[in-house]
Length: 330
Ligand code: PBG
View 1 (spheres, helix red, strand yellow):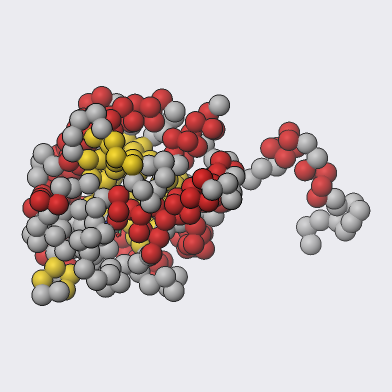
View 2 (cartoon, rainbow, N blue to C red):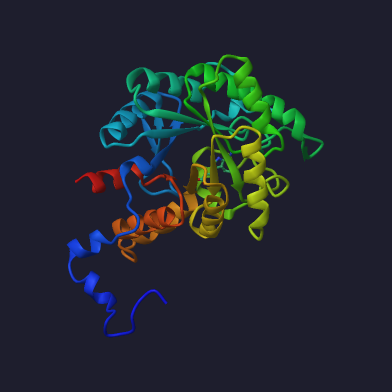
């Protein structure tokens, strides 16, 4: 026992005032813990609300640049781009994924131009460009691994050339981290970091995101052939070990809140920069309830994000980022 029995020990002594509570607080949340995922779309000076994510809109590139400026001014260090691709550009071979002038690359260049201090993260996966809606290339109904990795490498090189600071492979193909790292080194992109979606689960919490990027209608079947079974924990540690051994600089657990045990195990085991993604469905749950007056939106937002820090995460990808940063800064 590390404390004397009651009444010598009274936990309430240190809960008595805000100052005493703050003095013994074990974790803090700051704007530099946040990575803000932003959906981009074609057009100019326009925004389209995402119905299943109240408060979140897809933004045209010029609006995304303005949003990045505001985010940087709020102390947010990184923004993560997800394109809403014109369905006419979706093919089985996913060529739009490595078009130097695709939406993601155009937005990356525009943001790095206007707001150079903010880190731009991009998503490596074929689903926004795939007529089949899958993260990899589909042949005879099967997501083929090695050919998908070759496509992902092309996509990564085009994103690095556009100026991305951090690449986020969210595809869950085997061997992709090693292939990406080797290609980045060979092509003069030694400084580009990889934040691997190492422990990414086949989750129903991604539903609203697939609406946001227009992938829901396209997806045939499910992603259980490459994303993780929610019942597995040890496998997450093996995946993290594998991705680190192939050259990942940072790792991610996704979704977030239902998988805090995995965050803690990853941080304890590896001690590497560890991130969680508070995904679209988690956002929708909290925000949807807040809108109905069933939950105090600001408080559950801050509590949920603090929980990630307590579970060992170095940072969180969250759609709440600008709102949190605004509250924390005021
Ligand atoms: C796809 C991708 C997904 C998310 C990020 N990248 C969805 C999926 O795997 O189907 C989900 C993010 C969210 O739900 O907020 N490569």
